[in-house]
Image 1 (tube, rainbow, N blue to C red):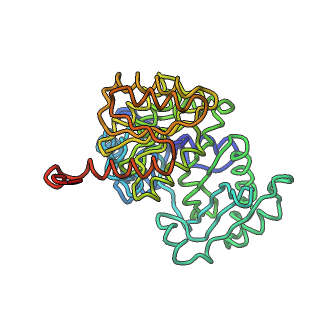
Image 2: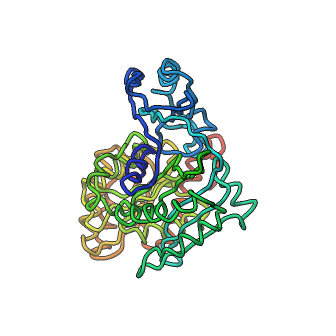
Length: 401
């Protein structure tokens, strides 16, 4: 789960990471003169709060030179759909703004903590070159990126923080502040089950102090039961509405760019199913795991999610009936197909308890449900059906003659 910048900064501030004072608003009138954070240089930064980077390049970060200017520019951003290279062409809606005093920045650094799954450790990633083009720095100058792995048994050590501070060429006050800042970010990462904490830029101000100018935090989606307060603040307007609906129905759904929809019980089986579709020449439209205890209600909800995608031309249902019998699954598929008015060609591969009976029920349903025994054959069949359904009628005449 992603946090907005203002949420991330509030969390980090609780671990003694220095951040600028800020005001979060949902309406321009909330930026009253007496509510704006104090500024020395007479300028404020207005930041659109969306779950995306590259906001500045997309016009989502503006500079205001007076309280009236703050309110005028806030009105320009609120309600706008911001399109960045990370959001895709649909963009994301701007419902909140973060207003902060403009900072006098002498240097921009990069600092992040994430999981290195291969090493099974938290890794700190840092660079002397922070700011908007950090991805380009990583590509063009990989030697400018420093990595520090943290032993999970002993945690972050003081000497590691000091070594990284020297690598970043910090001096004087910033050098002294860095170990405490890194310790705070590390403690926040552990305490709140984070997958990513990114501070970019981490600024050295004109006065020589460190300041987290921007912050991004992603939490482990499986940690909701431990991080109830943070997950209660989840902003679903920043997420794919289909994925939100799937979660409400107890389904694991991720939209993809292909045209063949998949409905599978089990994450590993779903990955194998998508691989076979790709191998057969097709492209998956989604990852969809309906879980082990498949029910008619779940199958119906899954079909509705699939049919909401206009790109889908065929469907592959791959169910292993271990916990639930295949004949019950088949009846659920048939009932759900009737409920949603399923007309797309649908290949169903059932395996497990009472699989033969399940396939018989599908064959006698009178619906456009094609039973297959073998998974590879099912993948090849659904790709063939998808390609046929994409072919204009004028080009299908005489096929098979």
